[in-house]
Image 1 (cartoon, one colour):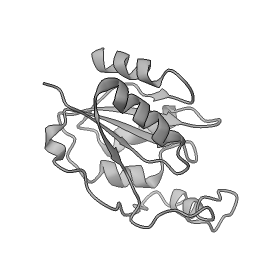
Image 2: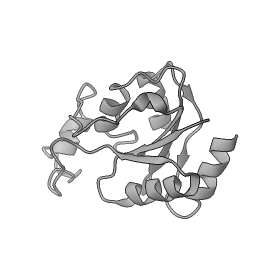
Image 3: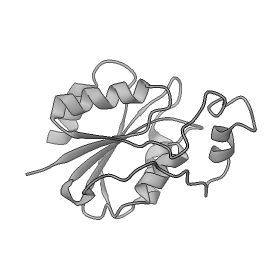
Length: 156
């Protein structure tokens, strides 16, 4: 039987809401990618060139620490990875998550939230971090429809 995990990072709560809607709709487990050092509002001020998020995103090698691991990742066949789009790609903490596990043979499905950017550049970046995973096309989910999309993509 296929077991699904919804792993998500959410800075403002928008992605968290979408992730919870998906998990409820498909009966999946939920895991929040929490930074070991939580982000403050000042950290997330993308207009400040010295803010933590700006510094992280300007350093492709940056890997913010995660507070705690997924328990028994081996049990999951499918992992849906959700995040807000930052600087046209996934936040660096999502890269930390992807590089923390062996996703070989697992199906990974990205979903994102964004006020203005698409998901295509993030999808390319994600695939580079986990080339041995089986990737399905992701989706930008900014409003209603997350549950229906998730049901469809998991059954495709």
